[in-house]
Structure formats: C-alpha cells, structure tokens
Image (tube, rainbow, N blue to C red):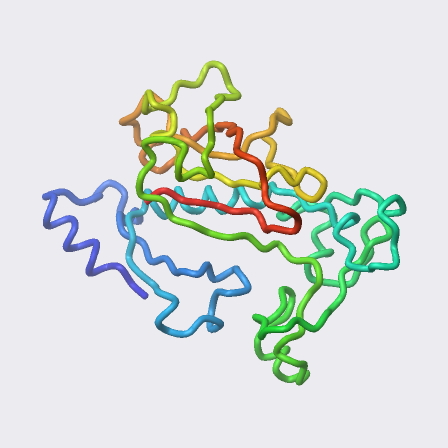
Length: 259
C-alpha cells in the first residue's frame, strides 16, 4: 500500500514539502494487528484488521512502544504446565521476549536451562505458531488448535484520556527514573506515550529495564520540544508506575497506547 497520494494531499494542505529530504514521507503505511504478531497477516477476518496511512511521527512512536515489550521477561521455569512438578521443585528460568541468546525458546523445542517449549492442543483455533510460515504449517496438516505452550501474549488497549491515572489501571503516582529529565506535561500522566502492566505478577514476569538496569514500564514525552529529533520520536524517556492490586496468575501483560 502506497501513501504517495496522502503525502501529496498533506503537502498541498500545509504548503510545504520536504524537498531537502526527498526520502522522508510524513505519512506512512501501517497495519493492525502488527504483521509480526501471531494475529497479524491473514489470521483476522477482513473487518477486524486494517492498513492505513498514518503520520510518520505516530508510526515511529508506536514502534518504540512495541520495542518496549521486547524487554519484558517471562519466567518459563515457573510457568511449566506439568502438574506433576511440585512448586518447590520448579526453578526460575527467565527469558526475554525479544532478541537474546535464549530467544529460540519461543519457536523451537531447544532447551533453555533444562526447560523447552512444546506444542499443545488448545480449546479454540490458534494462529500459525511462531517459527512456521502459513504455507509450511498447512502442508504438514496439523490441527488448527495446535500451538506453542509458551507464548508472549499480551492485551492491547488504546486510551484517549490521559488526564490522570484512571486509564492506567488506577496508577497512583509517577516516578521519573532519570532525575535530569523533565516531563512535557506538568501533570505527569499527560506526558505518557505508552505503558505496560504485569499486574504485580513478579513470579512470572519482569518489567523492562534500561541500559543502566533501572526498571521502567512506560515511555513518555520530555522537554525541550520542537527539535527535529523530537519530531521523529527520539527524546522519549522512562517512567515508573505503581499500580493497584493485581488479578491472579496467569493474566497476560497489558499494553495501552494513547491516541
């Protein structure tokens, strides 16, 4: 899908075009659900998926929020569905959701510290498992309810009102983890771009950490603003939320995005 026509309409409307940067397009094509997700591509019915031309800056921000999910970790050692294993015999085996030396756990049966993924039959139809192409999976003739035991599932929400912590699972305060940063919006919550919540399930999930190993669970806008780097989303920094009591395991993490 090309956004050339949408870009021309935009440039005509604002009376400006990026002649000095001809490769820069203010409108870009994006899809939902994400193509790289199990539910992307041909999985969802036509009326539940879309491709649209969206502002480049918003597309960039969305990509940064998705990248934040890659830094979540799951404790597959404690999630082992083998009911014959006693809780005291289960060992912690933490695996990041994104790229790492252990990433094969999500799409192969390779062992990671004694734990390996495997296929299981679900009660409802499943997308093509990670690691397989749609053509390969259909050729093997497997059940459409078969998929991996360990997955990186999460719930996605879009929030319109960021005036307080209501839409952020009732968050009660905000803490900037880098003292030299200043939020764009004084009320704190209005500066939040996106956030994740593991619902306090520390036994099974770990929040992302930055390059200094500081825990965070949100990205926000900071000041100063108006520079080109800010326009393409670079000066996004970290927040930490303290949320209300959590539901029982095994609720998947949740990731809301602000519109």
